Image (tube, rainbow, N blue to C red; front, side, top):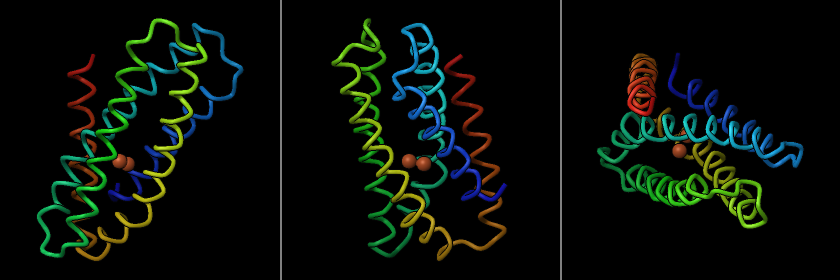
Length: 151
Ligand SMILES: [Fe+2]
Ligand SMILES: [Fe+2]
C-alpha cells in the first residue's frame, strides 16, 4: 500500500478509538480494553512513522522538510507522555483521566490533520510512486515489529 494511504488508514483507526472512548458510553472494563487497543494502535503507528517517514524527511536538504519531521517527532513525544500517565492510572474513567483523554484527543486530531496536509505534501514532493510504495511496505514491517515486541 502507498505510504500515505496506509498512514490515513491508521489515523482513521486512532480517531475512531478516540471517539469511542470519549462517547461516555463505555463502562470501566470496556474503557480499559479500548484504551489498550488504542495504545497498541497508536504506539505501533507512531514508532513506525518515526522510523520510516520522519527519519527520511529529516535527511532532506530543505529546511521546511526537515522541520516537518522534527515537529512531528516533538508532538509524538508529547502524546507519548500523556499516554504513559493514562496507562499508569488505576482509575480509567475518572474525571482526571477524562481530562487527559480530552487533551490527548485534541493534540492527536491536530497532529493527524497536519500530517495529512504538510507531511503528505512533503512526501509527494520528495518521493516518486515507487519510493512511496516501498515506504508503505517498510511501514507495515516496522509496525509488525513493534506489535510483536509489545505482545
Ligand atoms: Fe501519523
Ligand atoms: Fe504521527
